[in-house]
Length: 427
Image 1 (tube, one colour):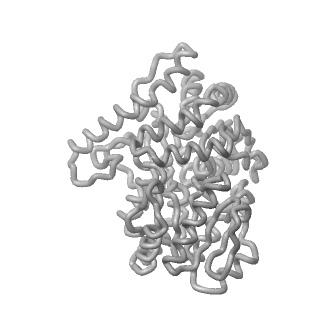
Image 2 (tube, one colour):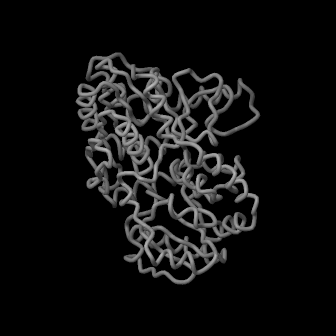
């Protein structure tokens, strides 16, 4: 088949689509992948190892300075829907028309369309062209069920879950429904009534790109919703973007006890002043906890930091390669980093910047591989140090993480997704 794919967001929203695109291309399909990176130009040089046609659309959407303003604004907001509205207003809306134009051409040129669940431009374009469409969902909190709810409250019963889902859908539609309906009006299409079930989910196939260790398929989900597993593979086309393990880092690892790895991923500030403040906080937390640490920060040299026997600074590293050598991982609770951490068999200390990241923090604690998550807006080095000490002094967390990792290593989300797609659409 000729398959068109489209995604928007940060690294955690792009890497799963690169992995799936490579898997589909390797399976014999002709794949075109459109990517819009929210805050970086690093994907401008990405090439495919299997021949995927990769195109960058309107990237980066925002400048480094604007990204820092948005980050500070967003993680200071307590209302989850206001967080989403702010991100879309600043980082999606300015390039929505460009992405929609690209989506319409992609739909004309391909037999099957696949998109990030936020990517309503491609969902609309595919519907207009009467082409089958697959939605890829990156978090297990957007598919309604009477057996669970997006707030993580347990013991409410089916009526309680239904009520929370009703409130959630009402809130989402109130904030987001105008986005797809503006584009649908341009194509003389009737308005959509529900973001959750008519945009984020596809009646053809919705792939939940989450490990079954986190997400079991609920009995009341429609047959079109399938759990494929974590979409990732170490030999991605963008591997060089994530760096390599240099000899100096290997020497640091060999010189003492396994360190704690610290990364806020795309939520690490890029401007020097804010990055310096965050690096100082992380460094102080490591010293207070009395642990060795590896701290990932894109411009640590420009911030005036230098590695020593206790703390090693680096700009980037492939998580699949470095995490297994660490004792625990401090991270922001992004879907990709959360699953990479768990697959490596390491416990987590989550510092959530967004409500979705709080969800992953709750999930990790529920599974017994983390303590209470922290919030970035109120984070102090002493708070972080206490959580690091708790994880380091609770060996049961590592035992449980290793058990889950053994199960995750038996999974292959890309292969499962390709199999589900071919079963549904290949005659």
